[in-house]
Amino acid sequence: QLQLVESGGGLVQPGGSLRLSCAASGVSLHIFAIGWFRQAPGKEREEISCINTSGDKTNYADSVKGRFTISRDNGKKTVYLQMNTLKPEDTAVYYCAAAQRDTYYSGSYSCDDFHSWGQGTQVTVSS
Image (tube, rainbow, N blue to C red; front, side, top):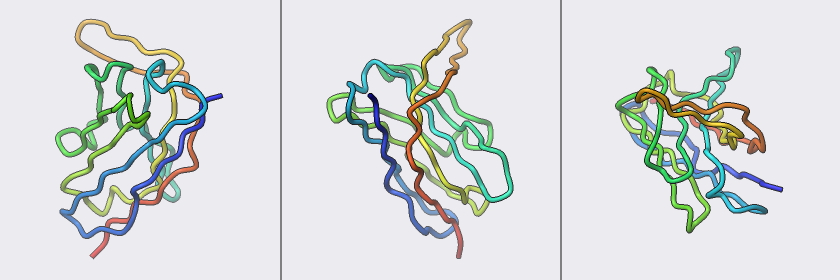
């Protein structure tokens, strides 16, 4: 059974950077596409990025495009989310999850049917 654990959250000033990690255990990570999500207080959970098994296909929500980068190291069983130029509106609990299905069509990549959610890591952007 796949288990995912997020880490790397914390308090950072606006304009700063953080790198989140999503570490896998129980089952080989390389067979799953992985997505990152976030949920701010009083708001719905938002999918912000997803990466395919080999790491050569990704997608990003418009809210983070150009600032966040998803990557993976299957040898280390870890998926990363590099977050740059952070804004107060990025404050949220960040989660990773495995995608049971992903699709690449006409240059567009997407992930779906998420499972094995981690417990989340808090990111707070504040001065």
